[in-house]
Image (cartoon, rainbow, N blue to C red; front, side, top):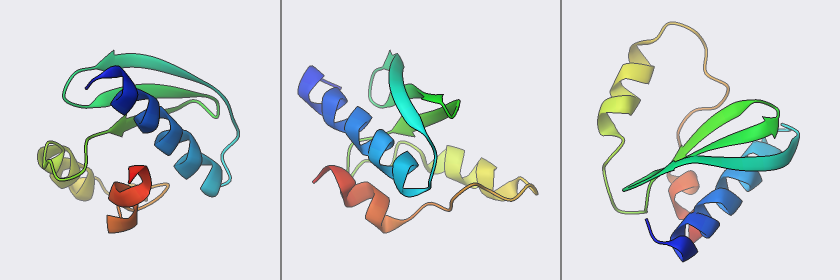
Length: 84
């Protein structure tokens, strides 16, 4: 993920967290490769963002769906288009 894409990915993660009423004051990029991992503070959430059109998170989605704990938010097609 190039710098301009990473900047948009961080902005998308912050926006989605705020839309879920999570307080976001800072975003710390932990990893950037084909997807971005960013820690949002002070809500202490790890967000992973992948470019639109890439199915890089399919395994992660399947594993999360097997987890019996309720999610904070479900994945949505709208999330993918937030960076458009």
